[in-house]
Image (cartoon, rainbow, N blue to C red; front, top):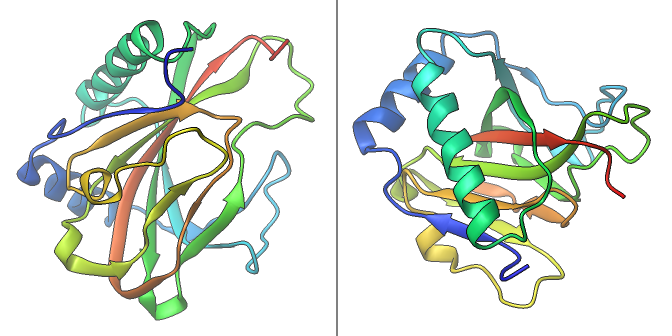
Length: 189
């Protein structure tokens, strides 16, 4: 592994981010849950989400994420065994309900599947950083800290192994929107 994370700026334009937000706000946003069982734990996660499958609207986005994840994986992340991308999660973190997601990892260690475990997490920043306060993304137990102002920029894509703990700090004003994808692969060995 050459790096524990990597990011790419300007992967999506401001107009593309706005189009995604507008489209996703037409979907039914539900209170986010956690884990394989889909448990709601408001003391840990306060956000509203909608899941996106591959469709005519999202096909290019799925392709963009898949290519970026594969390139990052080969060049920086140690060539982790990845095999598929099934869905995207649109997330809203609003100051109206103190939106946040406390430290957690995205791997479901209790997942019984030998074929599919979350291997890479991909996050795309959809909001203009001037539209909200707080809501910084944190990545823990890594050698080098994230460049917070750069990854906060609209259209930036961040990739890291799903086993690293991370968090979204409380949004204190406005709304932060993001997209998350999980790249799966065979069970961690």
